[in-house]
Image (cartoon, rainbow, N blue to C red; front, top):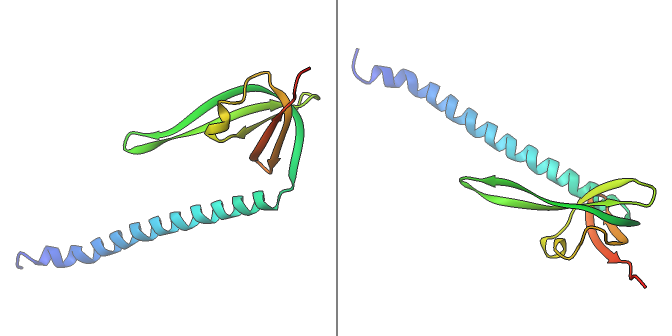
Length: 122
C-alpha cells in the first residue's frame, strides 16, 4: 500500500461532495429567481388602485450587516376611513416626505407603492 492509496479512494468522494454542493447552490439560485419572477408577474398583472387613506405609522426595517451590505426597507402604514390598514414599502426619497397624520390618496399596484397625493387642508 503506497502513500497515494488513501488519496485515490477519497478523491471520488470529494468530487461527489463538491458537485453536490454546487448543484444545491445552483438549485437555490434558480428557485429564488423563479420566486422573484412570479412575484414580479403578480404585481404587473394587478390593477392600479387608488385608495383614500391616512399615514398612521412609519418605520425602517434593516437586513444584512456584518459581511453583507445593510438593506433598508422604508415602510409606511396607511389606514382607510373604514379602519382597514395596510403597509407598503416606499422609496427612500418619498419616505421622508410622508408624515404621520397626512391624509390623501395612495396609489398602488398590487403590493407596490406608486404615489401618495396629499389632501390639501383649507
